[in-house]
Image (cartoon, rainbow, N blue to C red; front, side):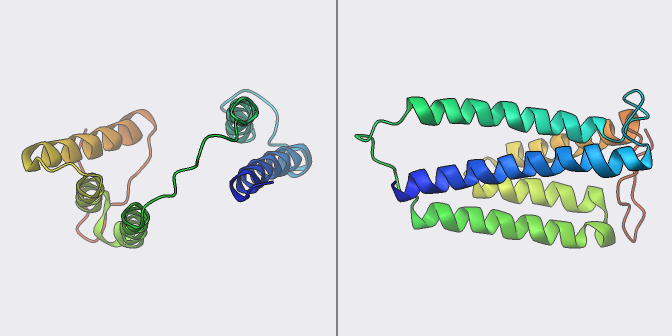
Length: 163
């Protein structure tokens, strides 16, 4: 078994273990607490169950693709160091974003985070970068605050948009 095939099987096994763990939690702890019954608004297990079924469906597709694509003549492309560096920088930016989100607030941290991620990914038109970052951040805020009634972190300046 090649190293890439081993890693693929290892990743698939990890996600199968996650599916089993979530379903086990639903069948044991959630049912013991009485929170795994009722409609979608009363059932605390409905969202994890839906996510698990989605992950399972995607795993089936991935297994089928792996089974079909077992051609040994295809060479795997090893990622360039710059690609790995780019991914590491994006991960670092996201970690910084999460660490200052509560202190500074959603509206002041999300726009620079989206801007910097798009810049790292290669977008260079500054006007389009700024407009896209503001639009995406505001759209997410609107959906979460208006439709889902989620209070986003306000930060020390308590900046919010009164919808």
